[in-house]
Amino acid sequence: GGEHAVPDEESAREWLDGEWQTLGKPTANEQVWEPLCSGGEIGRLNLRAFKAGGGKADDLLAAFLASSREYRSEQSSFVNVWLELGKRLKKRSAGKLNHKEWSRLDAEMKAKNYPAIHHSETYEKANHPAYRILTLAEMKKLLAKTK
Image 1 (cartoon, rainbow, N blue to C red):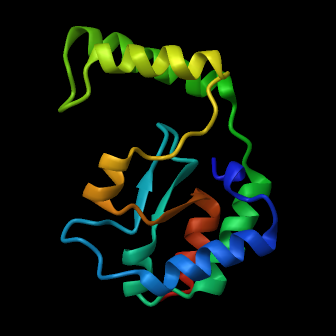
Image 2 (image 1 turned 120 degrees about the vertical axis):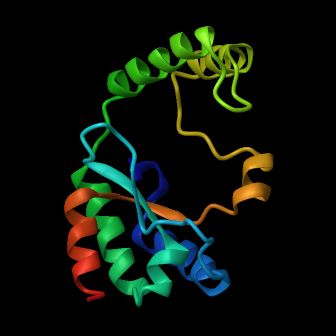
Image 3 (image 1 turned 60 degrees about the horizontal axis):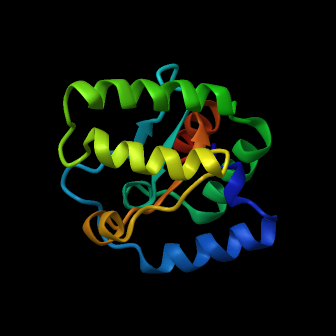
């Protein structure tokens, strides 16, 4: 979930305001919403696509804060999915992700009790991620305001 990204409301507002001012146009295949788990209860709301569709920063901030209060991820759920990824990568790499790199990262993060981590510099440069993690319910309320 996005709860790790909300130290307080003012910090969340400043972070969003700064990012909102620098948003460009969405990429050709950038969707507004990307579910992040099999049940779809949380996902990424992509800021460029949301803003291009008429979304407002204040509405997004409210949805983000509500989502961070409502949803608490279970570390065991993450670890189970993470370990399943490792099993699959042992059989076959996925793009540039291979079992050796997964194992290296797993050992590092396991020692730290699997904290939330930032994107790699390579990923940042290639994708310029701009999103907020929302609950499905908050995303639906938010997108209804843009129609």
